[in-house]
Image (cartoon, rainbow, N blue to C red; front, side):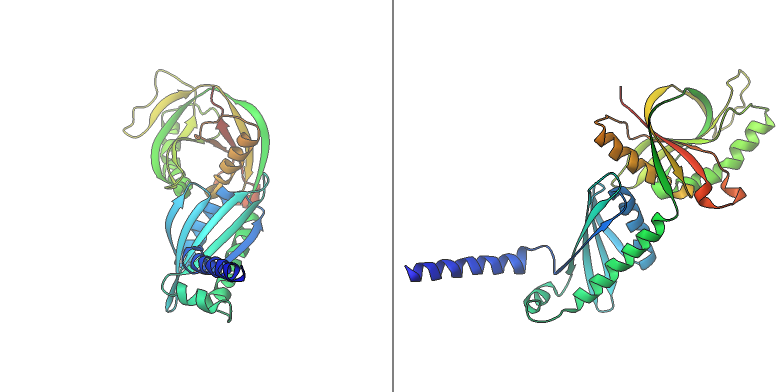
Length: 296
């Protein structure tokens, strides 16, 4: 009987060792809680990644990213997992492996300190501080359900990276302004962006940069500028304050609110901008109203 128990214990220990050495996803794991939704963490992580010279290897939706970072003579793989806890906080888990020395790390870890531990804590802490600094420079306020009013507009169709949206607006602001002014077209509200397609995993968007105008029979013909009417629709609304480069942080708030409220939404946000960045000023005072249409 004793031999059977010992043999069973040996088998269990062997299986546990194999799982630890070859199956467990990390040489080291770091966890923390952040006062941000997964989408905001995701986008901030990608900006930080570029600044430190890392590489995003893979993304699965908003919540899972794999990152590669080189440190002197070793390369570490960071697997980030983001999970919303509330409508404003997330749990972050980072499983970290050394690309070339993972097995050695796992053999040494029960008995010795391993270099990847110190480096991992330092790196994740660096991102945590970077994220907190970013969270100080914008604000998103959920305003509830509303009706997005119908409007006629002149627009320029654009596409590119999600983070380049503001650049596309700036490049075409003067064009729309001058063509409308030269042809005495009457404006009818602040400029806005209509997202027509959003590929979350590739961070790419197709969008229209629009000037609301009064429709007439004498609108100027232009090779780039087009015209159309946006019809009234129900939408969830948020107010964003901050640099317009990161106004998409409000998109993630609206997605989470839609989930909480059991609202079926279209991932085609519309953003109205009330400040001209060319005039400068404190960015936290810049205002945008963000709408996420509700499906009929």
